[in-house]
Length: 405
Image 1 (spheres, helix red, strand yellow):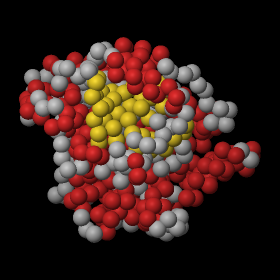
Image 2 (image 1 turned 30 degrees about the horizontal axis):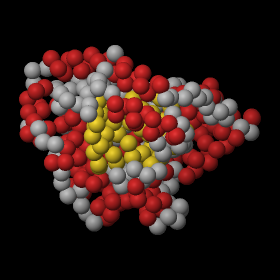
Image 3 (image 1 turned 90 degrees about the vertical axis):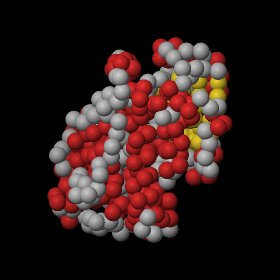
């Protein structure tokens, strides 16, 4: 209901048409005319009443580049303004929906001093995520395969998210010395209980049935049914969300997480992850593990040992602040945090984490600081401030597009 209210307010906003005027010339062209040198990274599939954006970098699990973010923004803007398009969809090529942002490219950009290119990446991606979260037309994301980090960011703010038996969701940023970004602090903070803290800090994975159970996905379908879903969606002539939902439900499956799933352990999770500090959370897990020898607690403690201590504290504060923020406020704050994370002013943990896990792959990052007790409050607070007094914050069209709460 809230999304429909947002759409109504936007349509009544006298400034809204002016915001889109500059795109009308583009939108009057066929999809094939909206091109640039890197268009193959996002393909377009056209149907009579809908368009599908296909993330197309299968060799890197459709990792998001700046060019992909820019093209998605261009396409979605045109489609929103085209009265002959009722709804849009997004899917990935190959075995992934999207594994997240292209952090390896970021790593090389940082090491060669190309900070402006890094800033452009985050600015472009976060702007599109806000656009998606305030989109006026229904959006269907087919989350078949790996859906992590930024991949979740370009799908979860949309109206419909279809998970499958091959979906693997995670926000694993603490494992590479970063923080859950691309809107993750917004949607993780709104999960049941303290599940968001658990996922943010440990980087643990969820499958499709678990995504349904906690609300990250709206529908579930076995992979074999996806062609039927896509065929049915392609035949629809509508912009009515209820019609699209009925179509999705026709081929959806009822599923439930298994007994060992984290979503079946919410009571224990809340007892351990409700605390104010990372140290207290770890103490609570150790206490539970000592009493019960519970495998889940032991696994969570093992995951903590793999993560950046600084990232743990920064990420916990991020999730806690996000509970009281709108989507745009979260993205603006995350933009500050991301620029701090790549600036190496406080720590080089991001570059070190990417090096250890994705470049040299020795899986032996040397975190700095190396332990939680060495992470000061000033270090954490630094991540939530602007890079410097001259660094502009992320600018989002909040006066034209209602904040997503």
